[in-house]
Image (cartoon, rainbow, N blue to C red):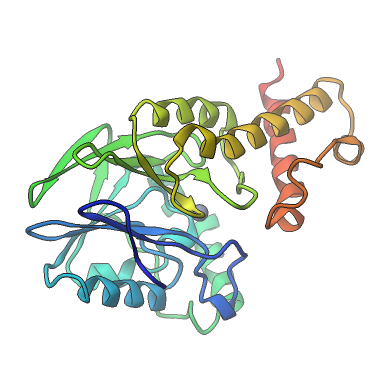
Length: 287
Ligand SMILES: [Zn+2]
């Protein structure tokens, strides 16, 4: 874990393009931090308490200011299992209120239970789901130690509760999982139609640097968002056609041309499920 400096105040650490495993401590997502005169704002809490401890240690090497806030781009496991570390350090946790339903769900509880086995010993009986201290309902501006942060809802896209965080003074955008780079995006229960639209919302910030939820820093916003957008468009086109013609999923999946995405990391483990979820979504969207 080596923090990379993005601008005067903004930094991030880059997770691996892989599935979470005991070998990588679930270090598969990015997290950011913004060092200000008065405190540090962390963006996403990484995928295990051990990773969050390491991130906190890296922050400590650069400033003695306290971590005052953690802003969550969304409540997926790989971005939140480190939360308790920042909570104990005294940080205020901020998330969008659309995550309430997921946090209270069996899905979240069962996901954590499964992770205690799959990601042992990094996720264990002491790892818990941490509730935010502040639920956001809409666009919110935050000023910490002279640094402006624009916190903007961009969901329902990747998740209902997606937030993007923009630093207008430094033109840095933390895009969460609306932007994936160097790997096949994780689609899950996403609203891909709205997600594609939200990418335009992100472009409108005019950021010169974008920290994605997964993968390396982007300095060419439009070009680097293409993978995510084209992949979602392709899924929707192919699966939308199949749903409309009531073609069985398996046949449509086999017949589809995946050549453009096949060589990307995580294609093998993620593509079929992404396609299937999109097939179900397109069935619902088809009148
Ligand atoms: Zn993620």
